Length: 458
Image (tube, rainbow, N blue to C red; front, side, top):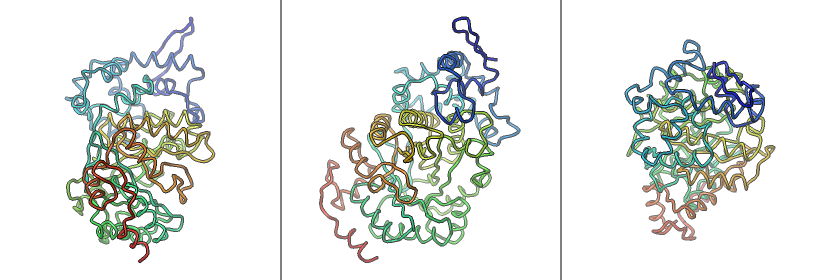
């Protein structure tokens, strides 16, 4: 039982799960689930009570029972007790102060990645202002490698997302070439297929791989099919660089996705065995998003942000190349407006980085949300300041297959310019060699005849 008294009113929170939910900044998904605070005063009371909870409590009180959830078992069984000694004496409030301290630098934060549980990260984020989330995330550096190096300080990458409503090869190729000519695609050239059929996915994989090999592009490809489809294609010898899967923070949610940890283990080992990386072996790509657990009726009464961060425990297990939260994609039932989307994105990015994940964000919203492109510009800029590893690059920022609004190739150029950020170093050298950018990273404006002729031949 946790309590705090305000104006002689005693606010009681029966367990840690309830306290975390009541302390969360307001969002429509938690209201829909019936777990949020009933008033602003109750929320503040919960936050004050949460600040006094020792971090050790999170190792002794599981918010979803150990015997009922394999993610809880993963969190507890993989906890690094030795690394935890550095922060084990702290409360949640003390942990916030410690994270914000100038003495807690990038190296120190790296040393605690394996001992911070998702619930600890979620808890401390609930006590933070947006600027706190940005300041701590900025200090974190998570570097991953496959054919290039992603996550270096001073660098900022993009996923080139050339989706097409019918998976038309010429339309996809045109979007890929368009993105490359704007310096996009160093994180991955990644397609959401219109169908999950193995034959269609294999055709897309071969298309991207042919372009990549023809121009010797130091990047990686991914078709975001279900992990079982990817496994089937690996067994058939398809050119799979990265294995993708959407994941959630509870076993019930992942069951609704048709996955579990055993299946992800199999996929990870199979993808590793291909040895397609040239400078590194980070072969997994995960996507998440607040609200998945509520959609799957698998939240167990846990608030959506804490559920979200629990999913990061799965991602951390596989040392992925990329993780991103598709923050506004599920809709206003979960994140109603620009304010809620911005807050959720900063929380997700902070928590992921604190847990040692190479976090990116799909800065996005659906057309029926109370948000617009100005909100997304604000979020994009905040994430750039916070050291976000990558965002999406979509022609005109309008995904014509998934029907939502995201970030364009131009948006990435804006962020690189105003913050002095560069693409992944190996990819930048390729851009310079192709004459797409100059030595200082500015677009040359020159047409690349070789790339443009590729579309004409298709």
